[in-house]
Image (tube, rainbow, N blue to C red; front, top):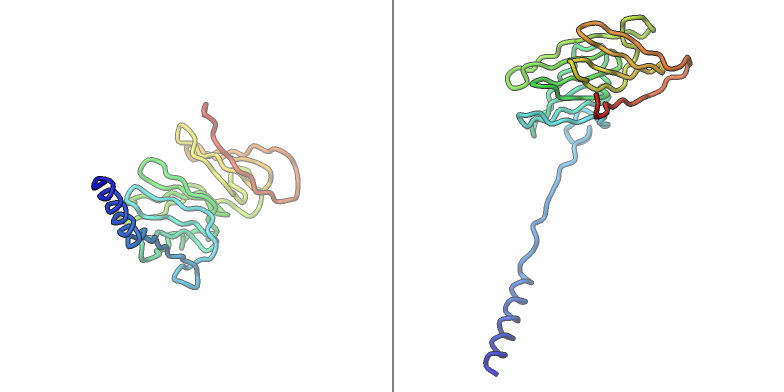
Length: 179
């Protein structure tokens, strides 16, 4: 009987303690133009090896360190960043007018144009690129608004047309397991 009483008392004590224990509450901060961010819509996000968040938006490319937003697309032809990818020790991004590379991520990041496009359909230049994927052999494949894809390889750009149309279209591109 004494054993059962001890079990009941132990059970009541444990139940009483559990009422005073509360779960940890997680919080979050929402950044938008009203609360410190220089943009409202985000098109792409990537975290680099150093832990910085790179954010592509309609207003440019930003690096976020948890407190400050630093812009890195100030000197590009367009501020609308569509896509970001990491390749080796640098980042690649595409905006409405071209493909860019960011070098020296850990010290002083700098933007280098790989190829800048045009608003006119021109052989050898991208036309309003939307999406891209780095391929094998250092090539870059990108989709363009004129129903075509392009390939940048060793400084040479080539377009592969799918169909003729006057309607703009946003395409996506992915690499399969065979490259």
